[in-house]
Length: 530
Image 1 (spheres, helix red, strand yellow):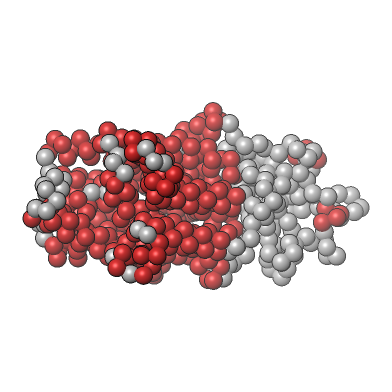
Image 2 (image 1 turned 180 degrees about the vertical axis):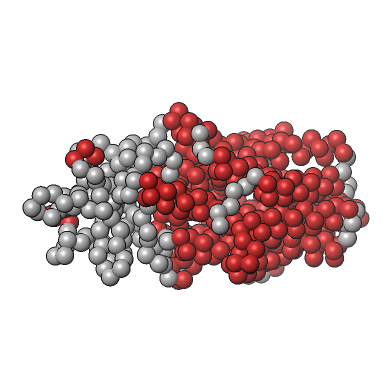
């Protein structure tokens, strides 16, 4: 693999940032503790998501948001995410920050999440303290709350792509699978704790009286949890700086001609030869024709070249994105309207009745029970994630993928056809199966595709990277932005369906039908690697 240069046996190594910054480097195995620390970002993200799900509607209603602006609030964030996610994924692939490619973006998005929560949970209180004019007060309160909700949703949706790319960059193939299972496990735990926190009546407790309102209590816990989780995540696994200049090997090599990193671990940002027993990885430049002067590395892709790369991506990547879109469309169709379904259909309540009427109180009771159902969904998602690793050896990724869609389709179908309190709560566990499946299996398949491409590249031209157009950040972003596209489809289409049918039952039936379509798609069109 190395190239001998006459009498002096020196080796010239090419940076990953040259022809292809996404080349193959086998990473060292990571400890379980490191992978758990890496998963904390998903815990904090889902915790804050659950708080938003429980409180964003009451917050919007309390500030007097006009109904005409609801669609803007829910559609603006996914539209921005769908358009910008692949672009930022490509930029992060080529980021040369001193402390890594992904962590600067994760930190920035975490700060944006905190700012968004501060605005939508505290905006009304801040405006009330600063503005005396009632008319101006409402305008400012509505404006700040809308900005906060959009900013939080945008950042929370966006951060998933860099987190997954960070995991793929610094872990071996076995640890990627293990890390994804930990991600799903802590996603479920974070969601469950977030829903439980929202179910507590804080105004009857000392902390609630001290901070003022439930909104301030929720912000205090959410900001604390998210800050600690992001810091833990950023300190979990070291990243190396991506370099595009050929290193001066005489200054980099150790006494035996090796150049290990300071902590003895191999860095992904540049390829180094590490002679350490049987473990070594190197990428040699074949002759002088491949040498480049500093600063000639590949730059971040332009929007035009990025779109070209996405359109021309291999068909199996495209099919995986479509299956992910179908799955999230089914899942969000049910989850976004589930508490409303419980209040109107299961408990026979009416949200438009007088607030002291029996119908309205029944609707509120249905909302509370629906929140407990979502909590059960998160708990079962964690439990199922724990057993997924054992199940995959028996039924494979195809079996897990198909079973997740099938069980969700059956569960939502039975809930829509036979709405009953206890059966609905039991069947909420099927939501957890789907949630865990969507967070793990597609990204496991992405890792398998990357591994296969790396092997093929090594077999065709050992030691020489190909001129690839996509990186792990772009592929993860393309997959993640399907979530935003699903939100756009659900937000723009389900309201029309409900108005046409006159009942929210159509939402649950639609989710079931889309899930069954997804079953057929993942079985027939998604490519699996043995």
